[in-house]
Image 1: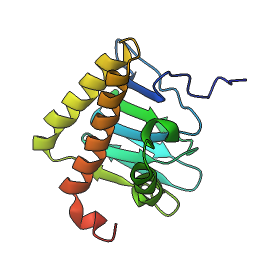
Image 2: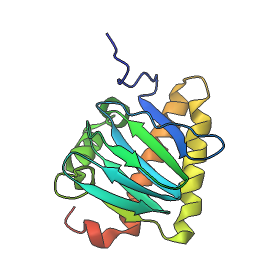
Image 3: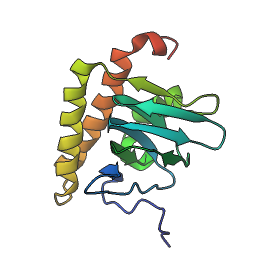
Image 4: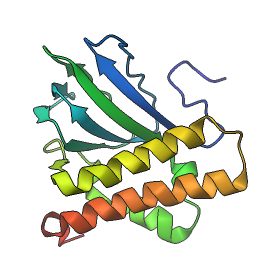
Length: 170
């Protein structure tokens, strides 16, 4: 039986926009057993995990591993885009499974992993999120699933390529 915090998506992915202290405040809903990518488009937010806390600013991207629950607090308006995906969504092949299992940036045991996007990269990230949001509203198909998977893979690789100095050991 599914609980309210399990991801109930045909694709195994959830994409959305969360806002706070705006005209159209949209809450962020967390799910268990998902990897999460968060991009703070506007504002400033403090994220608190069980053992760590960090303030993030506009343009920051966070990576959260499976079952990493967190709290967002802010004293000003913010807009945050997020992608949550399951192992089943991403791991189509052994290579995908290996990639996810070795992605140390999804492990926030010692510190909250984040990067700051360069302004010239933000337009690409905005396009990725816009496309994923459009796919979310479409009926399930194998083509849409492959497109969503490809976009997530590209986002992860794009972020790694843009900050390769942090991921040399990977």
